[in-house]
Amino acid sequence: MPNLSQLRSGYKLFTCRRGAGFAFPFLLLAGAASIGRASGLPLAVVSTSSLDFGSDAVGYGSPVQTLTLNNTGGSLLSIVSILLAGANPGDFWENDSCGGILGGSLAPGGSCTITVLFQPTAVGTRTASLTIASDSSGGLQIVTLSGTGAHDVIVTWSQTPGVIGYNVYRGTTPGGETATPQDRAGFDGTVYIDANNIQPGHTYYYVVTAIGPDGTESAHSQEVSATVPE
Image (tube, rainbow, N blue to C red; front, top):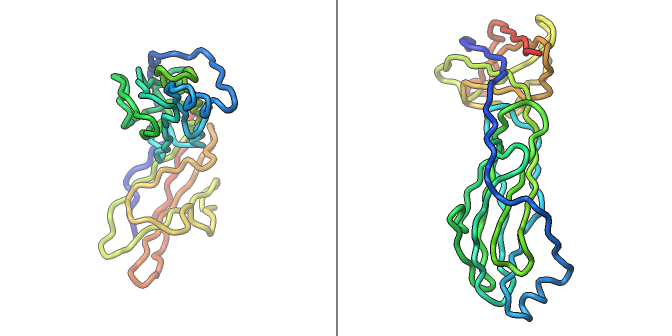
């Protein structure tokens, strides 16, 4: 059976970094794409106006989300900058093929991609905005970003030779782990980050089992527990 070697309940100090950029509103009229093409002016259009990353453990990155910036106008679009701003810009990271902070350009009908990662630095709702400044006839493009930082408990254990995966079981009382594992499909690593409705001030109990090549599940490991700070 696996040997649980480390358990940590999460509560991390953080420094909130505020990104530079623009955050004033703009108006984009319906039918502006056709107006831009007809007038020969550049027109920037993003594929979405918001990205919601849901809940993620503090200090750990979410899967990236992608949006597209298109030039639907009739002339070259000059991109001045792509910046993070708002309340919690340090909780989000962006990478793009558009020129980024230094800017770039898009030919008429051209497009580029922007990927965004959410990595919360604190528990609770985290928000920011992705601001795209250009010479677009439609003004600034602003995408709202949101996510929730969650408490987490990290369970680690030593590798068991010859196994194909592990199951982790959680309970709220000693010996009270559920019959259903936290991850139904199992996993082959030796670290489990539990951010599933972890509440401050509560104590959680864990056991781990190993899964053999034939699907046989081992007996439970020794039980460990963690109390999440208030």
